[in-house]
Length: 291
Image (cartoon, rainbow, N blue to C red; front, side, top):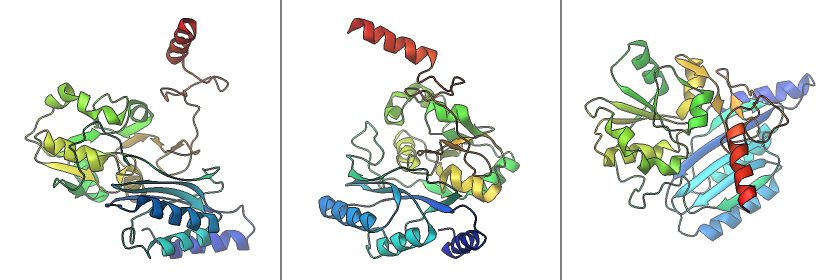
């Protein structure tokens, strides 16, 4: 999406001046019906086996979710071959760069849903929410437009960083969105509401859910937080953005900033040797005592 030519120049330059290798980390998704899911799974496994790339590809009957890391040649080859499949041709990918791979293995597997949500009646594509480009959101924020900016991520992600005027639903897990009826009832339905998440995939279900709940001016931040930070240099954003790989978080400049997080609740831990925060540790101790 953001220019393989420029990425190739960066990679070649790093080799010529003997820098550490530059890896390209791409992420993207598409909601599209996949009927022959086992055949598709095997094809993607074979493709990844041919290339020295790491990361994850998840398939469900509703679509595909991809997060990969490799050098420019490996990623370019993957994308060209993926484009041969009409279902996945032209997927918009985020491209970020690092001097190490944020994945230590390659995983290709199926899931029941790309984004689990406990509402079987909700189907992506059945609703008509709009996509709000990042620069337009920045303009809305610059002008202090009257709208609701709704963070659809989990609590710990919100605590790590979010937009200055964002609202949250106190979600511990996104799949429990339907339990937040009371919080949603407090939001005005006569104002535009803009949903956002890391890369956009959760909002593909969150925005339709809001439409189903009676909101009729629903927008989704196009490209999610990552694309917004890339285009605006983090205007109106504070803190870091959690990412689902070994980088842990990225800052406004899209550079990795690692934090040590609780294994259960993902809150930040000051003790680098600890596995759990005090609250989660006490719960485990109670459970162990019962057993």
